[in-house]
Amino acid sequence: MDCIGVIGYGHMGSMLVDGFLSSGVLGVDEVVVTSRRQESRDACAAAWPGIGIAATNSELARQCRTIILAVRPQEVKDVLHEIFPAMDGDEHIVSLAAGVGLTELEGLFSGSVTRAIPTITSTIGQGTTLVCHGRQVGMHDALRIEGLFSSIGNVMLVGEEELPAATILSSCGPGLLAAVIEELAGAAAHASSLSGDRALELATETAAATAAYLRETGETPGDLVGRVATGGGVTEVGVKGIRERLPEVFDEAVAAMLERYGAVGK
Ligand SMILES: NC(=O)C1=CN([C@@H]2O[C@H](COP(=O)(O)OP(=O)(O)OC[C@H]3O[C@@H](n4cnc5c(N)ncnc54)[C@H](O)[C@@H]3O)[C@@H](O)[C@H]2O)C=CC1
Ligand SMILES: O=C(O)[C@@H]1CCC=N1
Image 1: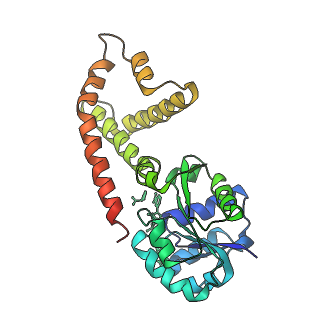
Image 2 (image 1 turned 90 degrees about the horizontal axis):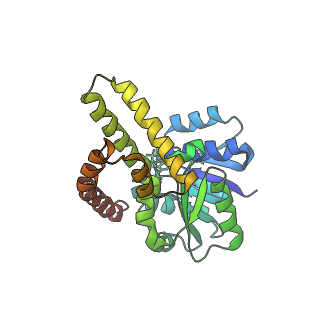
């Protein structure tokens, strides 16, 4: 059977297994998982009775034609070297690793290779997985992977040159925005008698409602600012300060992330 193998049961590996199985797009008899630590393998077996658990990466590679590499970027090369003897060359390797390019992956495995960059928000069926297929990937394999990831959220096909910036927005983005929510709530609580918990509750709800508003109305962020910031009122002084200082903050953050992106798999 063409099982899906998942190597690495950390944040992403466990999210994908949970998502694919909860959505019903795969059954437990179609998934094989392995991870470095026995505790992770035991946790997976306990969460999904009947799922395939392989003792080693090579054992998984012998059983599965589609192999998702959910290990950290610096582990990808070693894992591919490890499973290589167990593969027959017809496999489809799907790497989640940020910063490890198709050229490098195809240099390690000459068959079908896809890069798929998920996002933690797919835990709740939202957000976008970025997908970039290598040249060897046939239509059937491409559609299969796109279908799998569609079961846990949106899928966007991207060119590899777009991937660094798209990853920052789609996959790092939840971390960035969570930090912004925390800072906004913290500042409001710090300057007032509102408790930190209530400030965070309000800021989180406002962020969710604002994103939903923009998505549903199709208004631009500028339009929305104009609706909220009553002339001579409260919002406009806050937006003015943010517009003066945030571009530099975000330019620096994006530049730092792009630099790390280029180095992370080395
Ligand atoms: N965390 C995120 O939001 C996103 C992560 N990614 C990518 O997904 C990949 C995984 O990231 P996370 O799940 O956050 O990392 P993680 O550290 O939570 O999980 C990695 C897992 O791989 C296992 N592992 C390490 N070496 C192994 C080996 N040789 N054989 C088998 N298992 C091994 C670890 O024990 C761990 O369970 C990374 O390459 C990352 O760049 C991509 C998009 C988003
Ligand atoms: O921070 C990271 O390196 C991973 C890749 C994208 C999101 N998380």
